[in-house]
Length: 226
Image (cartoon, rainbow, N blue to C red):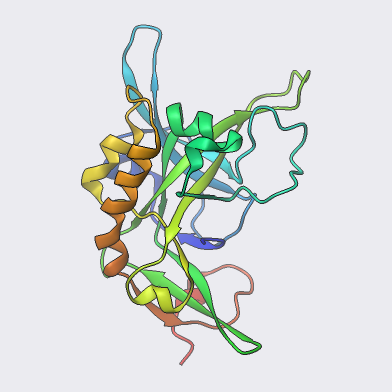
């Protein structure tokens, strides 16, 4: 799974890297939690048929359009890659609303007996590009502005990080980004499976180290604990 992550790359840099227009600025964070606001990158098709890619701020925990409130009976900050196209919550986003959630790294807790130790996980040199889904939501019958919400797709873990947890985020290589977010493609389970396969080499390159208890927010959180 992926329940806590970091991002300390500027909006301008991410916009250049993902070739996207960035609609908002965000503040670097080393302790991003579900329901907090995070940058998500996706494509849309204009009335003229032009495809544009942009980055916007989204609520991390997807709310399907039919949700009556922000309080769901199940967590939606992660979406399992196994069979999402058959599930009502994810079916629509898989087809038409796929996104990239950039990160610098993420945390996972290794459990040994009754002890849980946080570890910081990252690529040696590059940011992480999480495969995500998104949905626009507002309360039924409300005139409130629409809220952009998002989730991170996860898969069975592989490589060294499998010793920390049996789930991991789907981390896409840069050359799969266009295929994943393509607004002209109707997504299905085949596309999800291809994303999982493309993410395997990324997961096998991940490095990690133990960190201290995650309290507050700052670059010191990712420093090795010993």
